[in-house]
Image 1 (cartoon, rainbow, N blue to C red):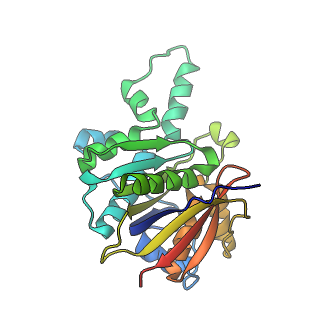
Image 2 (image 1 turned 90 degrees about the vertical axis):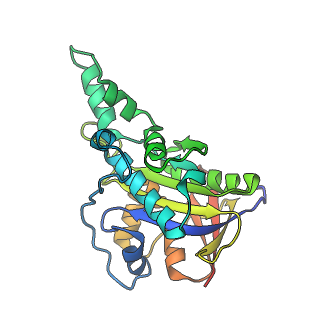
Length: 270
């Protein structure tokens, strides 16, 4: 197959991470580099910061995870969230609300709660992010099944390259209750965020370049982390975070849409 050789480039200013056994980016780095064991444990999503009390009560797990990793990445990069365009990528968004709405529609009383409905739509986390951060820049919301992380990364770097402005990628997923879980099993909620800029700064972690490839995707050496990578679409980005944590120039290949994959080159700044 002949693939286009277009290369997109940006600088990584901040990282956000939340998942089972991975409570944040600083503590996860030693796990990703193999210097500390990965211990799977239940993930607890923190209360969403910046939301008014009413919206905070209504926010589901997917919103909490998306906002937590976004805020971690923004804080690390010391960026103004109000000026950043955002790319939200998720394979299914809010499984709990989807299940609740399906249950109501299958019952005799088919009156759906307006709160349930507006929280079920795929762009709900983007709306909550706008409320929490005051962001007025455009938000793009993607659903690409198991290829959501690569699709989000491709979109975010395209925006940085074409528009010459910074962007924030937020990839997140949350599990479905039964009986939907039997058909789409996700073991846990998880989120990864990358704050990307067109120019290098004093806080830049690494240069990132991506292009399309048909090479085989990278697997993680740790069996438990690899199982996590394969089980949750947002976790497909873990090889990128592993390369960042290792602080060595490296290239990883990520799953995307068959037969395409994404080649990601990481060049650390320090």
